[in-house]
Image (cartoon, rainbow, N blue to C red):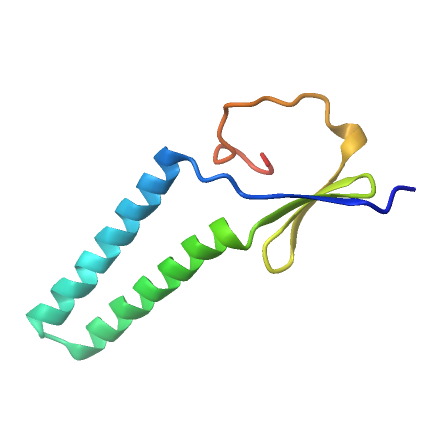
Length: 106
């Protein structure tokens, strides 16, 4: 049994980085509009909370996502194990396709 652990970094594609930044800017703009309109202060607090949660989610998926090969398993961890598959069951490796379509496409 091999006890070596191979750890891979998350690769940030330009298209998804642009998409994430666009979504974050839209949420930030909506937060600023609710602050400037000053209609309801609780709505600004709600929008600011959504903005903070969105930023933390985006940052965590880029900086804290760990893809590792441990023993004979491919493991994907964020704060807890998200996905684990036996390497021997992997039949095809396709490069240049996104992992955002379907489930467990790491």
